[in-house]
Image 1 (cartoon, helix red, strand yellow):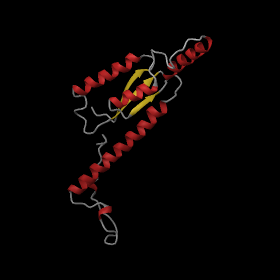
Image 2 (cartoon, rainbow, N blue to C red):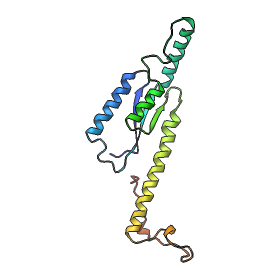
Image 3 (cartoon, rainbow, N blue to C red):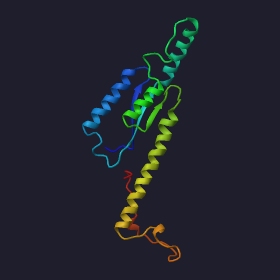
Image 4 (cartoon, one colour):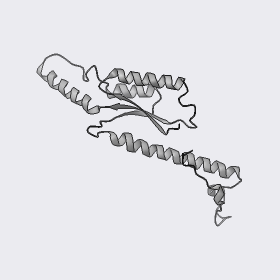
Length: 167
């Protein structure tokens, strides 16, 4: 299989789930998970159930105002965004994203923004492959031809081939 993006998802309410998915990723890489890839896919660490962590945070903040005891800003069970972003960097991810399927918060970044970037990278790979194919057949690109010497460009139709897999 080939992937444009890989999302390593965990529950922001459960620190162990973040470490579990990172451990799984490490073993998957060691075991050759990406060997069939011709390019390196985008990798994101994704914290899910953001709404529940925020709700727990607000509940703790409310309790903090009623009692003199000092609480950490995030409950100890939860993953704070700064820690997750640091861990994302440690595993070589493009970044850390958070979302809530319940409220929809952050879903646009996870789906749309990553999809747009994956599409952009696919088009770049296709253009590079097409340019290499044309160069292999001795066809110059428009930027290689002095515009004062040529009035138009001709590329035989059989040399213009795009694969549906984006490679």
